[in-house]
Length: 400
Image (cartoon, rainbow, N blue to C red; front, side):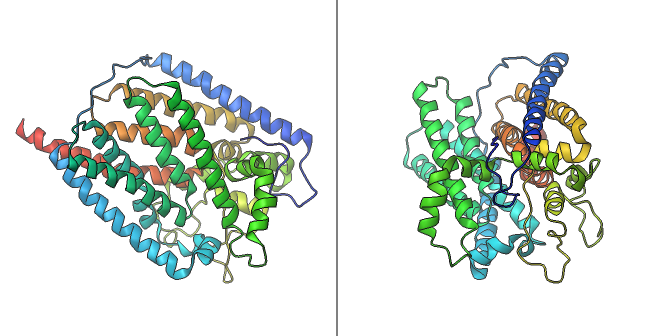
C-alpha cells in the first residue's frame, strides 16, 4: 500500500520531501511493470500453456492420511507447549521482547508455521469427499476448528501474516476447485478480507500499547484508530515508507550487495559458529534508521524490534536503483516456475496444496515480509509434505 502522508519513522511534525515520495512511487511502478514484462517474456520463452488441462484431484491414500495425522499431533503439541511458554512470560512482556525471547527457538516456530499447508491439505481432502456421513461431518468440524485454533495461535506468537497466508490459501484453493463461481462469492470474499485485515491491523495497533498502562485503550481506539483506520491499515501492512526513508536519507545507508539475501541461505548456520553471519533486511534497516538499536549481543538488550522490509525494499537495499530491475526479473522467473509447476500437477492433492502455498507466499507475503524469514519458513514448511508425498507413493513404486 502506498501512502504519502502517514509515516512512522519520522518525529511528529516532520515528514519526507516531495521528491523522495515521488521517486519512491516511480521506483515501485517500474518494479512491478518490469515484473509483468519479464514474466510475459519468460513464459513465452518456455512456452508455458495459458490454460493447463485441469486434473481431477485424487483423495489422499491411507499412508498419506496416517502420516498427516501424526504430523498434525506433533504440530499441535509443539504449538500448545510454545503457547504455555508465552503465557508463563506474559503476553505483554512477550510482545515487547519476543525477538530476544524467541532466540534459539526458531525450529519450534517453523514447526508451528507448517500447520498452514497441513490445514490446507486436510481441508481440501475433506472437501473432495462428498459422502454425507457422520464421520465426514466430524472431519469438517475438526478442520474448521483447526483453522480458528491455529489462527489464534499465530496471533499469540505475534504472526498476523500467518493468519492472512492461511486464509488467502483457502480462498485461492476454493477458486481453483469450484467449477462455477458466482459474483456473490467474490463479494463475500472481499468483505471478509477487508474485515480480516482491519481486525489484524487493530491487533497490531493495540499490541504496541498493551504495556503502556497510562493510556486509556478505549480512548486510543476511538480517537487514534477509528478516525484514521485507512492510515492505520497502511502503517500495519504497507512497507512503502522503507523506500521513502532510504530516498530521503541517502547519506545514512549504502548498498549491501546481496548480504540480506545471503542471510536467508546461511540462516541454517548457528550464529554461535559464525558470529559475523549476515543479518536479514529487517535488522539492517532498523540499524540504519536507529543506529545500534538492533544488537542481540548487547548486555542491556531489551525491547529489541526489527523492521519488516518487503521484497522491493530489499532489492533497493542491496543493489540500489538497479535492484528494482534485477529483483523484478527474479520475481518473474519464480512466477514462471510456479506456472510450470501448475502445468505438471496430475491430480496430486499434496502437490496442489504446496503450489497454492507458494503462490500466495510469492505474490503476497513475499512482497511484505523479509526475505530471510520467508525463505527459511518456506523451505521448512514445504519439506515435510514433500517427504509425506514421497512416502505415500513409495508403496506403489515398490509394488511396480
